[in-house]
Image 1 (cartoon, rainbow, N blue to C red):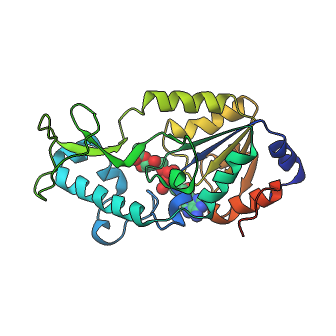
Image 2 (cartoon, protein in one colour):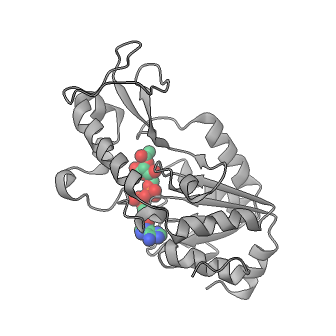
Length: 247
Ligand code: OAD
């Protein structure tokens, strides 16, 4: 529960920003990145698969990992945490949702204009030209090829060592620098530049609220910590704000 002082800051905020990470989708059954991998993928670390080097070394392995994650996310349903953030958008004059997630669950819940810092798992790109490709054949042998130029195809996500989409990053930085309240939800706050956004907001005078069941490197900087799963904490926070009761 948020104390009265912080609740007042949130109630009277004009600009609110939320940054989400894999933790918000955990209750939808999408494993977080730093959870131990299970089943087929137990012998790999996510960080070893999500790089351009890993892909070029073994495109089929990395492609298949994303096929598996894409199926998982397609079957997953938005949870009460995602739904609460849709209500937040209705509640504030300006509410910006920035996500590191590639699963599309915020948009499927009904959030509008989500800033996807790490791309989207639903899209496929030509490795060489970075252009979206929709029509391709997967013969199960090598990773599928671009029908235009024959280059390898890759998922439309940002890998370790790659730059973020500049327009998305710029919008995120602007929103963080000008908000009154910043929520950091379900992220380990380990991966830059996303992890720096809450600190930008805090330096500019915003109230920084972290929602996470476990401490992170951001925790010592947070003004308030709501310790618990986002699917419980966010609906509770919404009720405190006087928004819709999501039960
Ligand atoms: P991580 O897997 O690093 O962290 C997930 C965080 O969610 C942890 O801090 C958990 O404590 C927390 N968590 C777990 N269950 C939760 C719940 N029910 N409610 C709230 N929080 C919960 O995921 P990210 O921080 O998103 O990037 O990882 C950042 C980036 O690293 C990802 O976008 C991805 C990854 O490698 C790229 O692929 C470029």
